Length: 294
Image (cartoon, rainbow, N blue to C red; front, side, top):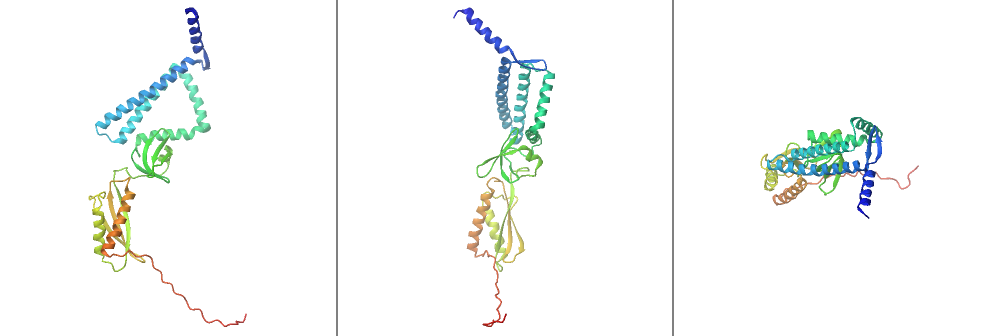
């Protein structure tokens, strides 16, 4: 194969790649423009990830809140990706009228079945702007409770205490009631209720419960634990031990530790935890004759 034949093959390939394969509102699209547009979008994704990591690292050095860093990083990434998509559309030769036609097609698609995707996308933007929840928060949405691992465009990833990842649509955080245990800070107040037998020394019970709370290393001293004498129950005197802790993720284990410690301390102090008792009275049945008349 000589040089002229090689140039001819290259020329034919170039003409094939640049030959129009689709026309939309006066805009012709070729294979080369499609390939270049995909390369542009790929490069925009890489640049978005790079700039996002740089911004996150710079904000982390300035001790900016993790939720704010995450929101700004995602906004920067989305902005760079959108600019890359616009550049790709320009490379493919889309004019404003062509984009308007494409938008009309997309609107028809949304009307026929993309409402849910659009709703979740807009809800994700609202979450990043208003920040009712952020990465690291411990939330409850419906029957799902766990820590927010990532807020994405369409859905939010929640990690449960059983190390299970649950994908929750963003629209649920906007339309439904959300319990955010970390919204105002990284601490929570918990209640451990216990009943003691009638006749117990109430001051001893109170002092024992307070000592159990004070001895646990993950219970805060400020605000200090309190003991509330709640009620005279049917079978017991009801007490409520209230304490604060900053270990939100381990609060279930902390409550379990407190219950173990209460049981051990009550045994030492000879404080009884009663169980419900019921008195059964059997009414005597009158004597029945051997051969009663019908």
